Structure formats: C-alpha cells, structure tokens
Image (cartoon, rainbow, N blue to C red; front, side, top):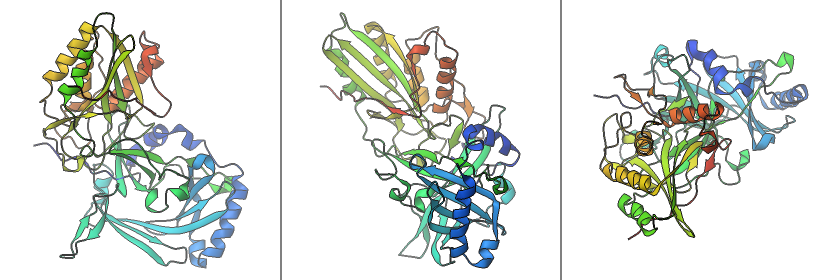
Length: 454
C-alpha cells in the first residue's frame, strides 16, 4: 500500500549534509545580495533594540546571525536576528531600507516531543509543535499549536484540538531534489501569520490567482545564509511564494461539451494548435517539491485552439482529482476536468497541428474521460503529456521523472517540475522548437476559454 503524502509546512532548513547543496541551488542571489549601507542600517536597528529589549535579551542577540527578507521592491524588510539561547528563538522586526524599525517580536519555534530530531534530518515529516510569539518586552501575543503544519483550534464540544484546515499552512515542508540525487528537507513558516499583507506592501491581500488558488509567503526557520555584521554584511532573501490550489474549489466541466465547440468551425482552411503548460508550486524553483496533502503539487494543463477566419475556439483544460489534496493517498481516485482559463504558468511549449491532428487530440482526450487520477502514476502531467504526444509520434516530449517524496515503492513520476526542467533545457539549447517555448520571467497567465457548446 502506498504511503501518505508528506504534509506541507515550510519552516526550518533541516538539510544536514545536503545543506550546502540547498544553499547553492535555491537562489544564487541569496548569497551575494545584501543591504546597501548595512553599517548605518544596523546602527538604527541596534538603537531600536536597545530601547525595546531587556538588557539580558539585548545581550543575547547573536549579531553574526542576521538575514533580511525583502518585500515591496525593497521598501520593506523583515529582519531576523538569532538569540544565543537553547532551541530556536529569534527576533523579527519590520524595517525600511535605512533600518527604521517597527513591530518587533520574539519568536520561539519548538518541535513536538513526539518527533525524533534525528529523523527530521533524513526523512520527510509533518511539522508538529509550537510557535510562541511574544512582544519585545516578553509579553505573550500568540501560542500557536501546530498540527501537521496547521494552526490548531479548540473543539468546543470536548476540548480536543483540531487542525484548522480553513487556512493556508502555518508551517510547510519542502523537499529539494538536487542534481546528484537524494532528497533534502526544509521547514518554512508563514510570514503572513505574523504581519498582515498590507504591512508587507501587498495591496491585493497578499495573494491572487484564479479559482481555488491562493498564495502564501514563507521564510525558513533556520536560514542557510546568515550575515556577519562585523563585515557590515546583511544578506537579503526573497520570501518563498507558494501557490496553493484546492481541486475541490474549481468546478468540474463536461469535457465532451468543451470539445464539441471545435466542431462548430470548419476544418477547411482552419489553423490549429496545442500548447502544454506547467505551473510550479514554488515560483522560480523547479527542483522543489512539497507535501501534496496540504497544497497544490503544481499543475500541468493544455490549451487547444482552432481558428478559421474570424471564428476562434480556445479551451484550457486540466486533469484533477475529484477530492482535496488533504485527503489524498498514493492510491487512485476519481478524475475531474477543469476549465483552467486564467491559470498561472511558468513555462509552455506550443505546437501547430492540422485539423486532422486536432481530431486525434480530441479522440485521445475522450478516451481518457474516465481515467482514474493517481498522484504518482497518472496525474495531471501524465494526462497532458499523453494528449500532447498523441500528435508527436516519433518525436514524443519526454521529461525527467522523479521519485516523489513520500513514495516508498520506487515509482518514478512525471511532474510539473520535470516538464519545466525539460522545456528550460530545450530553450537554452536553441532546439528547433525553442521559439515555440515560452518562459515568462517568474510566471504568466493563460487567456480565457470558450466554454461549453451544445
């Protein structure tokens, strides 16, 4: 029987021997990017902390361990300073680029005693423990009990604590797969639990997207690039922007009714195309995976288009499970097709096809209408590749396959990450199809769909 997926939470970087690989691979800019005028910046920070902390707490700050997270194009920073105390306790302060400070707090992160600390460095896990938030004067603000990455809430009928599944994870676990093989795990915590989106410069509430997609902004519990203030160096990182997609929220569509629209345009003189899109769960990080029981594993979907004169039909279609990620296991479940109009994407490959090939695409899609969704053996990427390759006989698009974190049977899977890596490699190699590959900076959005036809 297949293992349950790892639960999403993003806090500590529990990388053990793989720590150097993660440091080099997650973002090269994080080791070279630092605040300008760091000396003056730190003077202002120290002045604020001296006035706000007790003498003991100020003396406990390890100024060799600082890192700033950048928001609002560098107008806002969250500065983290580690305390010289047992466990993981640190100060988090909102600042501007000059070090003017506001809303400082002390955080203490602790794992549940039920978790074996040595296992956390080598095995996938869910985050269970506490995040205690205090003012700089040590007045308690929050004591967040975290179960499987989510804030717990009291059950009024019995006093038992239940995970609050109506929010994004407070802590989520990433799994990074380096080129050399193996897996390294990292825990990250939600910055939007501590500061409102507006405080960090988000005018739209800190996230966006379509349908059931929202965004969370996360920072590592144990950063991998601390600064050394004696050299006036304060490294700067960008927060992890994680997209979460609940397959229960986007309504299912009738695939037959969507495909029927193409019959309304004559084949004679028509031009047709099919485009395959990949959406990474962590923007900018094609090697990063996270638990699919608490968020989106990313997504792969298709756009099919037919045009003849002024008549055009365009449909964006994705293959989903008919239940939420939180209830999914490595077992087949029922499928659902969704209109992915407006969906985010990180890379795509477009192919011009004939009307006859379009009929092949439609026939292939109809033959898969009852295909069970299996997250490691037949997922959205498998579906999209099978349809796309139905009109690439002898030139099939083949992508790197990975053993998904949590999979214990050694099954290698097609993933959005593998598709992104292949398209990126093709683009860089200037293959004959390179001009048809779109990589829109960090991300882009697809257009509308025509909708169903009678």
